[in-house]
Amino acid sequence: MIHSLFLINCSGDIFLEKHWKSVVSQSVCDYFFEAQEKAADVENVPPVISTPHHYLISIYRDKLFFVSVIQTEVPPLFVIEFLHRVADTFQDYFGECSEAAIKDNVVIVYELLEEMLDNGFPLATESNILKELIKPPTILRSVVNSITGSSNVGDTLPTGQLSNIPWRRAGVKYTNNEAYFDVVEEIDAIIDKSGSTVFAEIQGVIDACIKLSGMPDLSLSFMNPRLLDDVSFHPCIRFKRWESERVLSFIPPDGNFRLISYRVSSQNLVAIPVYVKHSISFKENSSCGRFDITIGPKQNMGKTIEGITVTVHMPKVVLNMNLTPTQGSYTFDPVTKVLTWDVGKITPQKLPSLKGLVNLQSGAPKPEENPNLNIQFKIQQLAISGLKVNRLDMYGEKYKPFKGVKYVTKAGKFQVKILEATSSIGRHQLEAAHFNSKGKSLQVVTSLLKQ
Image (cartoon, rainbow, N blue to C red; front, side):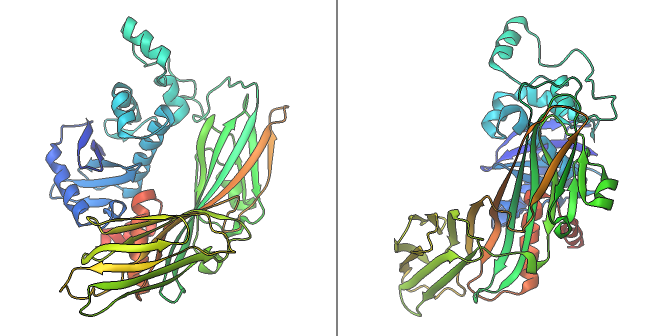
């Protein structure tokens, strides 16, 4: 299945490679670099690239590219899911999935990759099993290993390896028993120049942090579970119970894990929490133009919208911009032509705006089209789809755990188009970009393979 794995940073440097079956030359990554140059954004690099002798399947996580080399046809989502599992494992072991963390723990990285993949096929991918096989790095363990010459590899077979519940180790004990759930939703949307919604979709996940003693059996129910589409489950969930009652019943893994991921695709259920008033104009045979944008709350359910950032890729003829923000601060990079406006928090009493002059190259023709606005934001304690947890019940243990649920809504690929764009083109570009970053949409795989 997977022959080789290359880890590439944003500068295009291959800083780690691992081969399972046979050594594949680094030159195979040249096809990936060509696709990266053609993509307008790092997240828009095609996740599946066909070469004369190989397939390159990649993901982009935490400013790193995980590029796998495949010699035969395999389901792309299978490989993408495994690559995300590798990135999640690095995050779990080292606290972050960054180039520095991987280089500092390169021995453990190779040990993990050797256990996770056997002759190119996934073997042990559960965090609890891996932590019994290979101990997570600590300062004390590093000192002992350097003195004694020992490694982090365990001496015994993990208890869960041969169990029918491989995701949970036996004999778990905690002084404080806690169960926390984070409902995180991302809005992907394309808004046209009149403010109408061309495309809107919600991608959501429920992340869990479970620290419970013994072998608890949990049941999580929702107020309105019927609005969820394309639900992807952790292996611990009993699927028949979900099909019949729309209740999540499971024996949880120990620690942090992703319980489910889901999609809300019905556009009438997707509330757009912000609106943008914009006026960007360039005069014919003139070396200047006007720039004026205002952002405000729309359907925010009474919650505060914070962490707002507006990014605009200006035309190449723009030399500089002299703007005045009523709130926050802005930067303009004359090399990349990227304008970034850090707005912060919106107060309905005074809407933030950014306006001023745009300086163009003298004698250059007027730009054929206006730029698009990319918006990032976050809303705490709100699931924009309306999803709400009803209750969490525990069976099999006598103690009463502390339970908590947190909701967060944030922008995914949220774009405001200044000019009209066809719905099909905008939708395809957005889905392809979202597939590359999360790898959860089967429809996109079909469209990519048809190209």
